[in-house]
Image (tube, rainbow, N blue to C red):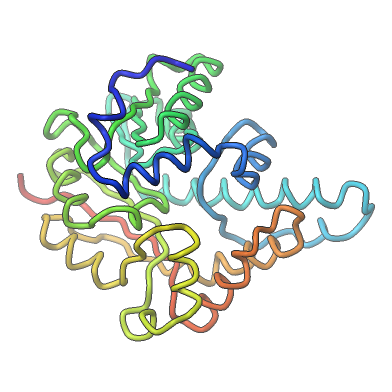
Amino acid sequence: MTMLEQGTDSVLQSAYQRSVAAYWNNNPNDDRVNVKLGEVDGLYHHHYGIGEPDLSVLEGSEDTRQERIVRELHRLETAQAELLLDQLGDVLPTDRLMDAGSGRGGTSFMANQRFGCQVDGVTISEYQAGFATEQAAERGVTDRVRFHLRNMLDTGFDTGSMGGIWTNETTMYVDLGELFTEFARLLRPGGRYVCITGCSNDVTGGRSAAVSWIDAHYGCMIHPRGEYFRALAAHNLVPVSVVDLTPATIPYWDLRTHSELATGVEKPFLTAYREGSFQYLLIAADKVGR
């Protein structure tokens, strides 16, 4: 395991954070979906996918059917990451970006490859930070892409040091007010924050059994849609783009039901999305003022 710059005790601030970190540290091999999909091309993601799948993968030889499904699911999750990076705008090689809740590092590597800039990934999982750091060494980019055992609520990075920050399905593990306080500190004036997240419908989500099931399964705190916009406004982060990705992600979940990697979460997600109690949302917001 690669040496990391902080000890776990200085990173984890609550019993809840310790439980989340412990899951990823102690059960990395239970994460079959992310591992198997990452093995396709070495980009290991920790999020879901978007876009129209090529359903021809369900046809043809049964012997290779599951392999074809895995490759297609990975293509869709990589397409999601590409869309997120599109929203960062014009990024220069001299800029610095932060991947908040970076997992095994897939999107960080994509950002560096696209923009040529420095990327700092932050995670509270020692296993994930070590895995991603080893991936950076294998790719020969340790001078530009670094992974840190740090808390995204209190990163320790310099004020105004980031030109862009993103979160990809990680905001449901933290308090949004605390998170955006830190992001507003880190972003330079005019810097861009991009978020992709699942959020509950303010009107019906609280009464949805499917949303409650997802919340309990992942041990997270799914926020209502409106809470994002209130918290952004309170911290001088002004939305410039809001996209409902729900229609674009449903086909991904439909395809996953045909995979041997299906975990049982597929039905609650599809139910919640189709009944309108849950949304898959992209928000891009600019830091205004100082």
